[in-house]
Amino acid sequence: MSDEDKNKPNPEPEKPSQPSTQMVGGDWDQPPDIIEEETISEADDEIEASRAPLFDHLLELRSRLIWSMATFALFFIPCFAFSIPIFNFLIIPFVDAVGDKSATQPTLYFAPLEFFFTRVRLAFMGSLILSAPVIMYHIYRFVAPGLYKNERAAVFPFLIAMPVLFSAGAALVYFLIMPFVMQFAAGMEQDAVAGSGARIDLFIKVGEYLSLITTLIVGFGSAFQLPVVLSLLAMAGIVTPEFLVKNRRFAIVGIFLVAAILTPPDPISQIALGLTILGLYELSILSVRMVAKKRTKAEEEDSVVTS
Image 1: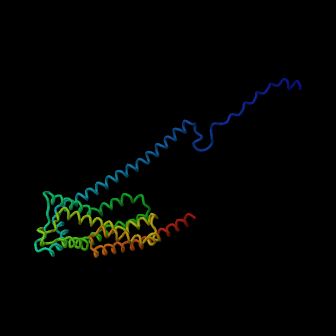
Image 2 (image 1 turned 120 degrees about the horizontal axis):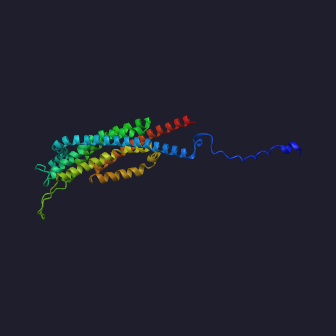
Image 3 (image 1 turned 120 degrees about the vertical axis):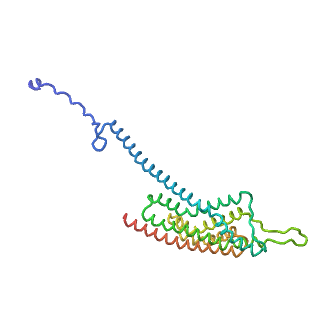
């Protein structure tokens, strides 16, 4: 080694390179404490953003419940005021059936305060029926923002069909089922015969008659919702027309079994109700086929768009 090289100062040893704690890109450029604070802040913002729509939905739900209850109360007052004429209209099947079987004037009996509570129940049911379109409208308006445009267009016709079908079921009860029920009941009366000192008369109370006719109206009105229910199930992909056609024979047995339970042991009324519900079942098959075609077409269009 030369003297010149010896006289040069020794270079300082190189320090080992330290890995940089700063990472390039995104939030990793910030220190850990800043990252944690920003993450917490974003989470709080998301919670607040989700809390505000939920609060708005609750306010809207409260508003629509108030409107529905106010509509029900508004209809309850005139329904109670006209409850006697309404009840007189409902007992026409009883008067016609018993009047033909008895020489005396048809009579309905009631216990103390029974007729008053019967009027209250009648006003309650009448108010519920009259306010049902308004209540259904508010339910639809509440859930409509969560539906697509095509779904809103598909659900709206069912809102119109439901009260129409319920009215058809109520009309069937009033004009066909109740006359048969009353004629069947009046036909079981008998005079006192030899060996028996008792006369068997039909004894009907106003509350029992109202319970009978309202139960039948609600039952038949609900049964007439069969096309609506099956169509909605088809829209959800739960029911197919092939399933309904394949199980038609089981449906026929169930339909006439339900008809035998809901009607008196009279073959004419049972057959009439069974054929009516069977017709509704066939109508449901046509409706489900239309829904299935629209559903298949929409799925094909979506697949073309996504591809």
